[in-house]
Image (tube, rainbow, N blue to C red; front, side, top):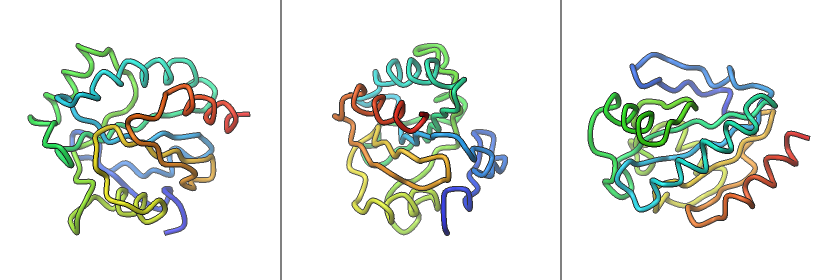
Length: 155
């Protein structure tokens, strides 16, 4: 694989979504959970999405019960919680595994480019406009630092 554009993921209903639909956008991929100490980051993520979406920025939300088992429930339950509690508008996909041999292909690719097991919810990967992974951030990285990099990439 040369970029994330070579990968197809599943929306929360199980339909295939080729990531090449995000070509020429700056993308932030996040593994999320609804019962994590980091769950309130949805507020900051939604603010980023609202601020930069019209300029070619996307956030892709991949709920996961790994690594902390903090994302119970069905895909629809997770989606409803995020919409009602945090009013999120960015795309949410089917729950995935982010570690191990049965990790989703997207996460295998991401952790190949920035090695290391994902050890916390809300780990973020920043993707440039040509589909290359350019940064990995842990949940404690200040959102202002991530936002600065997004602004630079959007030009």
